[in-house]
Image 1 (cartoon, chains in turn yellow, orange):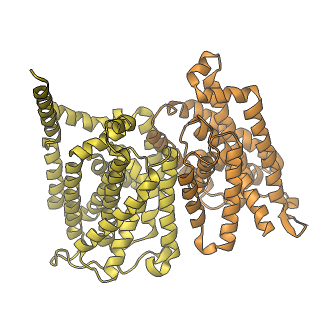
Image 2 (spheres, one colour):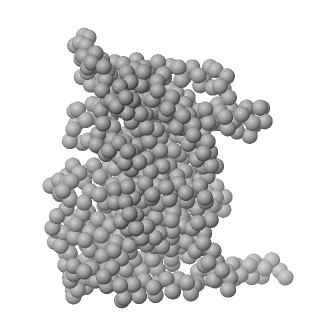
Image 3 (cartoon, rainbow over the protein chains, first blue to last red):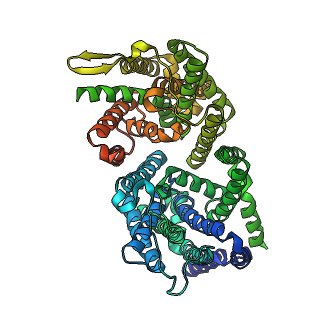
Length: 333
Length: 286
C-alpha cells in the first residue's frame, strides 16, 4: 500500500473512532428523559429542581474550565454573580424579556471571562487559584460598595422579568421557572457537547493532558484556554441570569467564596471531564444538603467537609468512578 | 501617618508568623493547604480557653498555644496530609477546603459562634508616645515576638543542618532519601512547626484580627497572598510581602475606607501578573 493511501485510511479510521465516541449513548438519552419526567411528574418539587438545574448548568461551566481546560478555579462565582446582577438590573432598566436578558448576560459575562482569561494563563496552580479568588472578591466588593445600583448588602430588590416568550408568566410554584431553566440547561448542554466533541474541543483536551506536546504539534495552547474560559464564563453568566430571573432577587451571596467552593465540591461529587458530572453532582449535592440540613441545621457544613476529605482520601475515582464505569460498560456493549 | 505605619507593620508581622509555615508547605513542599488558617484559629481558641476559662497567665498560654497547635499539626500530617502530598492540586484544594468546612462548625459547636477576646495583662493596654508616634504596647509586643521568630526562622532554614536537609528534601525528595535524609520526618517536623507558629500567631493576633469560627476563610486569601507574593526563596520574601500587605491593608482601610479590601486584591493581581512566581522567586525552584 502506498504512503498516501495509508494516511487517508488512518484519517478515516480516526474520524470514524471520533464519531463513534461522540454519538449519543442510550444512558444520555435516558438521563434527559428522566429530567423531562421530573418536569411532568414532580410538580411539588419545582422550586428545588429549578435550583438544581441552575446549579447543574453552573457546575457544567466549571467543568469546562477544570475538567477540560485543566485550570483550577476557586472564583467561578464571579461569573455567576456577574450574570446574576446583569440579568437582574436588565429587568429593572427596560429589558424585561427573559430570553433577551439571558442573551445579554451571556455576552456580557463572556466578555468579562475573555478579559480575565488572560490573567489565569500565567503562573502555577497557586497563582491561578489566587487570581480567580481575587476576581470574585473584587466583584463582591464592587457590588457591596455600589448600593445605589446593586442594593449593596440588602440585595437587589424589584427584579421583575417579563413574560417568557411573551406568553408565560413566572408563577409562584416555579413551573414556568423550572421548565425554562431546564430547557436552557438542555440547549446549552447540547452546545457544550457539540463543542467538546468538535476538533477544537479535542485540541483543548490535548492541552490539558500535555500542554508542551500540544504546542509542539502546532496547536496554540493559550488560544484554546482563552476560548474554553470565555465559553465557561458565558455559561456561568447564563446560570446566574436564570437564578436572578426565576427567583426575582439577587443578593451579594451570589458572589461569595462559599459558592465557588461548593461548586467545586459539586463537580468533584459528580466527577469531572464527562459533562454530566456537574448535573449529577448538583442533584446529589442538593439531596445530601437537604438531608444534612434536616439532621443538623447549624452544623451540616461539617459533614459536607467530611465528605470532601473522605472523597479525596478514599480516591475520587473509586467513589465517583462508578457512574463512569457503568457508562463505559454501556459504551462497550 | 507613622502610627498607621506602625500598626501596619504589627499587622504584617502577625500575618508573617501565621503564614510562614504555609510558605514552606505550600511554597516549597508544593502542597496547596487552604486549611492553614484553621491551625491559627486553633491556637487562638486554645489561648481563649486557657486564659479566660482556666486562668492560665497570658504569657504562659502563648507557648502552650504553640505546642498544642504543633501537636495538632503533627497528628493531622501523619494521619491525613501524608496521603495528599502526591495528589493533584485540585484534590489538595478539595481536601483542605473540606478540613476548613469541618473546623468551622466544630468550633462553633463547642465554643459558640460569637467573636472571642483574650483577656490580656493590663500593662499591654498602655500606649507609648515616641517622637509623635503612638504605639500600643500590645502591638509592640507582637512586633518584638514576631521579629525574633522571623530572624530565628531565617537562621534555621539558611544556616542549620535541619535547614539544609529541608531544602534538599524539597528540591529532590528521591535524592535526599538516597543521601540518608529522613524526608518524611523532615516534612512532618516542618508541618508541625508551621502549624505551631500559625497557632502562636492566632493566639497573639486573636484580639487584633477578630477570632470567630469564620476566621480560616476570612483570612485565607491573606495568608495565600503572603505566600504567593512572597515567593519561595527563603523567609525574606514572605516577610517582606506580609509587612507590605499589613501596611497596605491598614492604611488602605484608613485613608480609603470606601474601597475596603478592593485595593489589596487589585494590587495582588497586578503583582502576580508582573511576577507570577512571586516577588522573590528562587532560581530553579518550583
